[in-house]
Image (cartoon, rainbow, N blue to C red):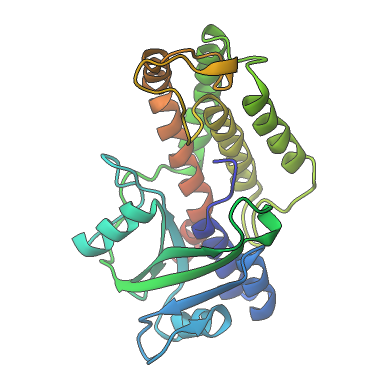
Length: 279
């Protein structure tokens, strides 16, 4: 969770565009960020893949009134509403965007090219958003902003307590590098959400990202030394064996769930706010 999900950027800046708060070019630029190109495939009315600017305009023409985010994992279909084919693709990607009012969803597929072992700046990333039909139904397990904020405050206390007990502080170069990267991003003055989002959504998303950063530091995606082999140098937050890593993962699982729910609540809040005003 140190990196913002692409679905979050698409939903946030797509919502700002649908609300008339940013231009199509700015929205497309903000969504793509450092990626080389984004395309949308299988969009109704388009025989070939199209760029973000055209795709967002087409979604509006198809009836989209807002974009929602889904961040599902196995056993937790967070933000999804079916049908099974879309849910399966979204689960495989770990994220998706649902166009409310259009009955369509977008799932990202990423393709990378570049020299092996090269710097990140040398990697060419292309993103293809697959467009599929979705049900117009309430998304699964998405809390209100108020609920998310309360849950996050408790989750942050729990995460801090768990990591303190597991001796994560000062745990090694990998964890320290991740922590410094998170701090640098936090201090860079980046725009957390697009125009049109309530201040509370910004607070909730920032806190969710902070909790997610702690989890990423404690449970890196690439774990060496599994199968009972000690992990050299304490690189993974002070854990020295696979059993200790498993215990840490179990302790932090509910915290991770809360942080993901809060992220989705923050990204979806612009649509929820708009629907409340219309109602």
